[in-house]
Length: 555
Image (cartoon, rainbow, N blue to C red; front, side):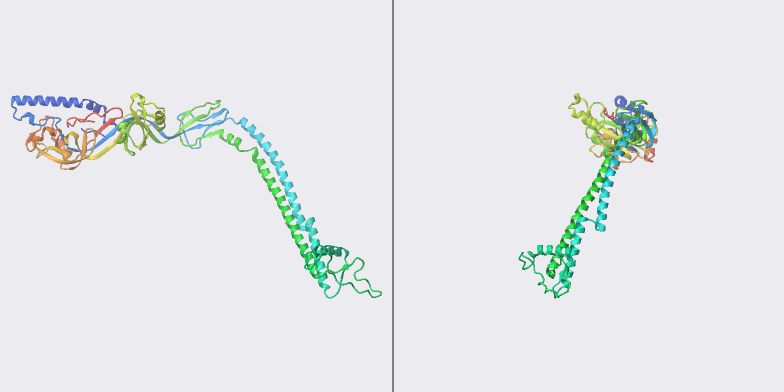
């Protein structure tokens, strides 16, 4: 009952055994019953019906027990890209073919760009003209601002200069008033006198005690002495009081500040015109150039977005692509896409170990692990991806009674040499595994934790006493169960059908099998390595029962 683990554990020879095992056991049992009846009739000295025949016992040995589900699938890349182009121009050069291996950024396809280049040249010319016009507007605005700043700097701004002159005149009047305290004085300058007289008239109504009918001036001067020169000459006016002169100065200073504030606002407006002109120039630069044509020219050269293998080329030189150009698959990691029956889904877990073979590589074994079991199934003999399964279910069909299949993804681990993208594989998903455990037939265990053994004194003995042993079981498949603890030891002869020998506990029973090999008992006791015991469940059919007769060796 031993075999190598893996996908090929159920080899053609093993499959033949699996299909014929029940028949073989039935024939063996029939022959045994026939021999036993003959012995009973003939009065054989060993009492044939009391012995263990071939198929009635198993020599307990440490083996690897596995339970698995077999699926068929196809090899796929970890990712793939479909390269498309929006350009409606001819393919000028094509550098790859399906199956070629490419590196990242490697040149693939060149599209004709003559029409794009003409459009781009025209656009650049229009853009240059618009930008030149906009820059002319910038220079004009900057010139106006610079002239204004220069006028402010040298004092030639009309409004500010006039206000400053009034301040100077008011200051002169105040200085004169202060100098004239204690005696009447006259303002000799007609211009200053007129300005001060005007300001005095404007201020008279706002000064304390003012009546609006005039202002207080110095008293009339005494008649001049004969021959004296008039006090200020013709046009002189009486001197203002200090209070009036100071008020006039404050008024003119306020007017100067107002003139400067107005000038500041005018400068801000000129600066805003400069800023607006710059924005207009920038907009002119980008108005006819959103980068579309440059991008299209760049896109006319297609490079590989990733390393991988070219899976398809959908154009030829001279073609105008209608969207898709070619496809690239990243085969640095490989997946197996398969489907399992609904009944098998609960047994499959993420990271379950997988062993598989491919059609292209023959019997060479590869390894993998389960990365995903889709929760969405589809009806039919083969389920595609989860998206395809969901689409099938959303269509509302029940499949007419077809079995529901669930997509499974398996990542290839280890060696990938010889595996072909799209190639078919036969994979064995290991759902349960017990390494170096004592494996016995499931039918040999009764009352959940008891077995019967034929206890012998020496490995070569063909008779012994039937004893009941307690065991602790672990992993199991359709045929065998792993014993993880208890009283069973390697080399013990386990009775496969305990119900037939419960009444023989404590009695001596002989092994009536001409093919009994004591060497197997010795090897088991010495824990010499053996092959594995595996039971596989095909994704489309149930596993065949396994015979536990030690004479059936499986490879």
